[in-house]
Image 1 (cartoon, rainbow, N blue to C red):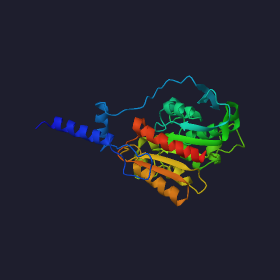
Image 2: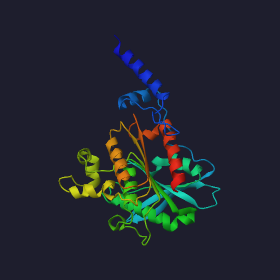
Image 3: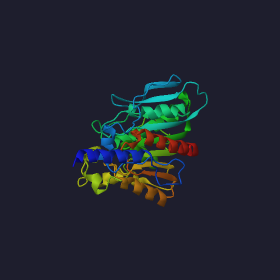
Image 4: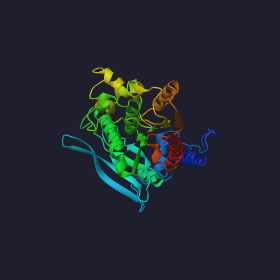
Length: 323
């Protein structure tokens, strides 16, 4: 028996079924694309050219203005910068979307969100993407302080770029989702805003989009990972309080911004239980939110063209409602 051939045929049947099937959720106008049995099938599907991925380095359209390397904060000699995108013919103040990249708090760059930045600038928003201090430069709470300083910068100087600073959404994936929730759920906390040169400006925002971000760093899985230990610069036994202080869960309350959540069920980096719990906590606190639990999709699932289209469809509706 040719096991390799049988496995290939099984994979092809699975992929064909996945591409032509929909999620069983009939309450949503756009159903999630069918996922995979596990990450192994997904990787093989990609290797066989059966999984379409988005272009992560798109060209800047001629009708979109790109303003790069705007300094929003300086820490000693380190310049923290942001990039801005908007329609060239945009003549009225527009809502702003602040994108926060992922990378386990240790890697990544602000250009990682270029596809979203361009897509949403084309839809009439002003989009920003920010750099923040990674763990090799400074551990927690440095990254959260940087996000809050970026929000303060937008509120003070955003009008110079056509931004309506009364309408701000934070959008982040993975570690970026975690930072978006930390900033959004605990606005104006002195310990998270004490490095900002701009005073007397609130960091409160209107909405949060969380793509597979960790919400509770006190779980057995979270405290065992090197990424979390490095971010917090301590083991759980050395300082369990910091694990609580760095968890968005800790700050959830009824006045938190509306939150849109996307999570794949076969995510091996941020377990689906993190978003499942977030959904429950937000419900208990009566925070307006929507949870999209995509069966059979992994971490960074929105690199898939079909998943990206799905996410943007619901982000569009969410932003229209809350900005």
